[in-house]
Image (cartoon, rainbow, N blue to C red; front, side, top):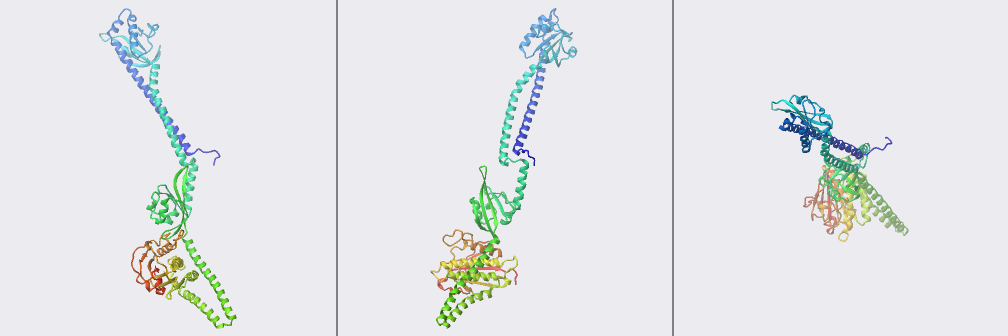
Length: 572
């Protein structure tokens, strides 16, 4: 790039427009001047012709021409005519061209300077000729006697100087109007240039072109979603990333955000026009992290810029990590308990109570081993088995008994392991993990009314996988809102309310349904399907058929029961 500083686009347009306006005004003024000058000459020619004819047709002129001293009679007459008209001279002459009258008496008796041939032939004519008074527009008219013979000539004229003065008097106002027009054009051009400078940032055309090219390249190359929302809540700009993340229509730009079919929570936040910092929002298939901030330029509010990142895979991996962490915590807890039991066994042996030591050791091992054997035998997927064992240990630490029903069985063929076909082990970790967490929280909340218990059951049929999680808690008060992000029954639930929303998302992704009821079939029941909205209310006929539900006792009846049905899509 040249070291010479380039003019900005606004300055180039300013100079160009000023030149164009100046040329147009100057050209218009010149044409107007020429037109006025032509009209002035035509008007002067017509005036002198009319005056010369009037003088030539006067009977006194014809008589004076034949008198012994025509000049003595005609000079005063010509002076009187000059005084009453706007012409510069009236010259009466004989056919030989000798003057009888002239504005300068010294020129009387001398020959007329100009052409007289056509007038002598009896025809009036006009011409521009330089005489004793300078260049002038003149008319030469014959004087006829009674027999129509030419006996004298009359010439009347207006000098070009007088015509120019007349033109100037007419053109000066026009030039004033032209100057005002030029000034107005220059001011308007300056204002437009100033506005353009503000809108283009004072960039030169080459630099402005580079900015646009870089803007387009960056906008369409970043994977994250980028949306610019104007002050009127209309999308002014969006890149390819956000179109894929939010499934935006092709005509999204220019439409209001509440016309794009976005999730209600995200739409409400965008319409609120407040800043967002790493907020989680859910669509039917994705978990998104949304940030937004206000945009201002030169004191003007341009709306807000919204960035969106896909956290779906990260959220799923986080769920799996939580499961592994829970399993590790259960191992730590069991190691701690094993140390306590070992000390107890050693103490019993030292006290000589060998039989009691053996009975105590084998009894505790049998309880733990039965749960482990049941889970491992029923669930072939190791991640899911680790989840159940970890959740059982976590529930035990919180004083909740987690019961896996005897008929639980999830075969490898029921999962889309190694494929992208739902339900995958990751989907089941999301669904079961969050349902069990909510059930444990509910059981702890209802511990005063019933023994804290959570029952988990899973059954596989040729067509579907059925998961049920029941708790001894107080039940779910608002089923229609349960699967919306931010819903929570816990006090001080800021930052919570994501678990059931993730469950609903995973179920929708797998094409399944969620039925929510109460243990024992009492209360309202809702179904969440592919749309994620809770709809039909009615009884779940087989809620009590869930193995172990009746074992919760009368005090536990009325707790929430979540039944998830996932289609297996032809797996066998």
